[in-house]
Amino acid sequence: MSSLNRLATPEGVLAPFAALVTGAVAMGVSPIFVRLADVGPFTSAFRRVALALPLLYAWMRLAEGAERSGQHFSKATILAGLAFAGDLFFWHLSIVHTSVANATFFATTAPIWVVLFGWLLFRQKVTAGVLVGLLLCLIGGAALLAQSFELKPAGALGDAFGIATGVFFGLYFLAVQAARKRASAARLTFEATLITAAILFVVAIVAERSMLPHSARGLAALIAMAWISHTGGQGLLSVALGRLPAAFSSLVIFLEAIAAAGFGWLVLAEPVSSIQALGGLAILGGIYVARPR
Image 1 (cartoon, helix red, strand yellow):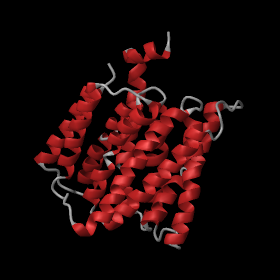
Image 2 (cartoon, one colour; image 1 turned 45 degrees about the vertical axis):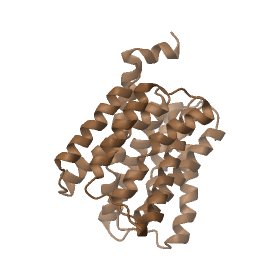
Image 3 (cartoon, rainbow, N blue to C red; image 1 turned 30 degrees about the vertical axis):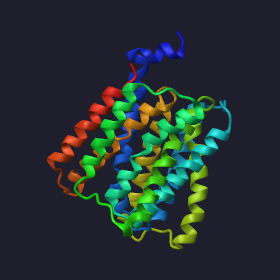
Image 4 (tube, rainbow, N blue to C red; image 1 turned 90 degrees about the vertical axis):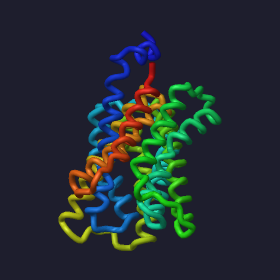
């Protein structure tokens, strides 16, 4: 049976879809860890990837055993590492220069860039279901952030950084999907993370100097972000993108916004309004409409 036929069966979609949903939830909790970590934004971004490297290396060795399969540091893997470094860099710059709501909203434009770049660069066809699902997810994402989202001239630079975050995350999806054709999810995630960590180390040491947490709670938050949000989130995303289309997968990542709101309610006692709840339902509806048939 061909890979296309396997994807067309429920068994071919269920496992990667479950990995994608779990990965989105794991990434959705990362803002909680960022708040609890008592370090600068660039240091937290660096620690997120650097502290994940030992686990990712162990995963790679266990997954491949004595035989190292796939191409090492392929062009697509290098692009994935560069794109994720750009994503985290501009995301933290956006948070500094505009509101968290604005930064989050513009970052969720990633699926737009996945569809656009996929069509322009790879001639990937986009179904009507994906376009309708994208629209519903964008509406839902806007509803989740409607209460605190506002455009101000003073935050224009931060908003631009937020858009750049979405562009780089979109490129990351496409790069990971391309890299998965020649490398395992474990090797891809480790090698891309290594590249990202090297870049963010330079950024953090230049921008913030001090790179050590000031409390045990801060250290625990950084470790949790590295092991849960990055190792679990990005690792499962790499697993899923080996089987699912990048455009659909990018829509499922909207669940990250629902998870962030849910964890904010549970952990930080942040209220969830009826509009936000409807936004979450719109996201779920968009994912359902765009699902692979």
